[in-house]
Length: 228
Image 1 (cartoon, rainbow, N blue to C red):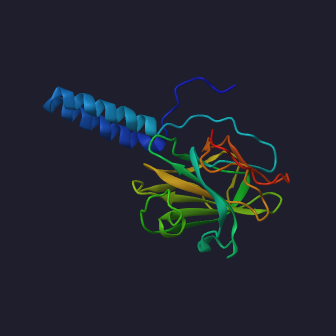
Image 2: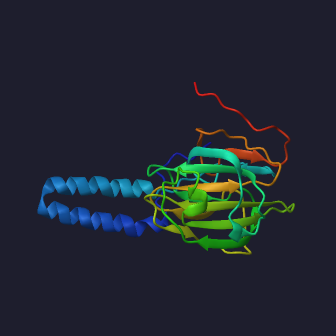
Image 3: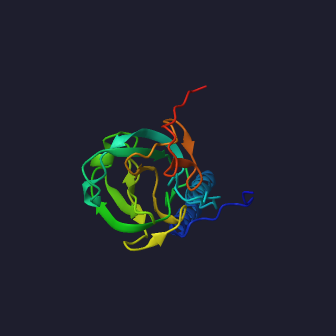
């Protein structure tokens, strides 16, 4: 049963919440209606940095969504070259987070982080396909216990200006474990092992750490979806 309580604020968010609160107090001293506006913005900031608990599927082979948001793309893509996963396309699932989604990112599968690579770039709209290539990004090359390689890539967006990744190469993380976040709208791509079939469809909403996006232990074909 999902815990029923107010989601805590992630530690990365407290400096921002405090700053918003100070500004709101200053605005209230100038003119009370501005103070109410500042209070509303402070509440939104706290909401943005919420970090709710998630019920994570723990069966071996399940790949879960690394982020809350809308599945933007489900199509083959070449992993970022700096991750050393080759030049051939592999199944890719892209999840777009708007400013109202939870922005804490989670491990898609239990794996060892083989390599962490940052690449500076542009700040195009993260919903665009070319954002995977041209935008600022932080990529993690992962290896599962049974030797499968995959990657998860944090991509900055039009509003996002800060990618945080507190995971280092050599660490082994469990499925659904928090590894980073992106501030104020962004996208996360997952590059699956060759032959894996995505189990989500474009337009579907995903929940980070809970929604299963692939099953490496199954031979189910890619799913299709119908808008109703």
